[in-house]
Image (cartoon, rainbow, N blue to C red; front, side, top):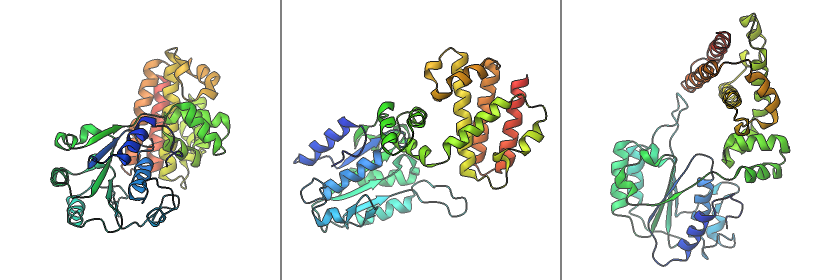
Length: 336
């Protein structure tokens, strides 16, 4: 049913008992960091609930209409509520009162094909206060035959009144070794798989995302920058960097800054004699050598500059300007 989803044994066992129970809670909350597989498991659970045999075995019409592999979620008794994207900025907005009002209007309709109507609400912790208060009414008077699965990363952002009306399943990071094996099965080289598994901290989704992006090459660019410090002619050096070219896009820049942030974090671990905790384990020798040339205070300052750059890039400040300013500040911190 959900063997292809890594980890979360206890959560799966609970959901299996839920499927077999006569009386069921009407609202579940899946809470945990991004990329742990909450949505994957929620979709597999929804498919099993809608399935004629509650197995999600792909042998019935309901399963055909919930084909998770190709993203076909056309079952008439399935609803998915997601944050909408702002057309101008490209950012995702909080779930609005209009979206909740639409959901409430749909709650008047009973299931038409299955015995249950399933609604998954992503990022329920990113719901406006007005929307959350409206949604609370739906939880207080749940429509007959409905099951709601709420997904959140931070339960502290949810109204306490909402928390009191749901059964909460907390998701923990998957073991790094499991993530590494998963990546290797996907064709990632073992050395890279180990590093990506460590960087993702047990998040399968994050590890896959890094493997599919240009993370490895961008990490090498970040290493090269750290190895070049101190810069004798900073502006001349920056002029030749890939990440200072006009065609260096914002997603790439965010990932580059993230890789640099993790490397500086590892340098701090090395300075503290905690090299067993570094993420970039394949570079341990190089990182130990680099760390000797840094003062701990300078590394902490560099880490702050990197975080400021990441925030600026998220806020759509010009890519080249942000990366140039960040590099000059790090170089200055190194020299002080």
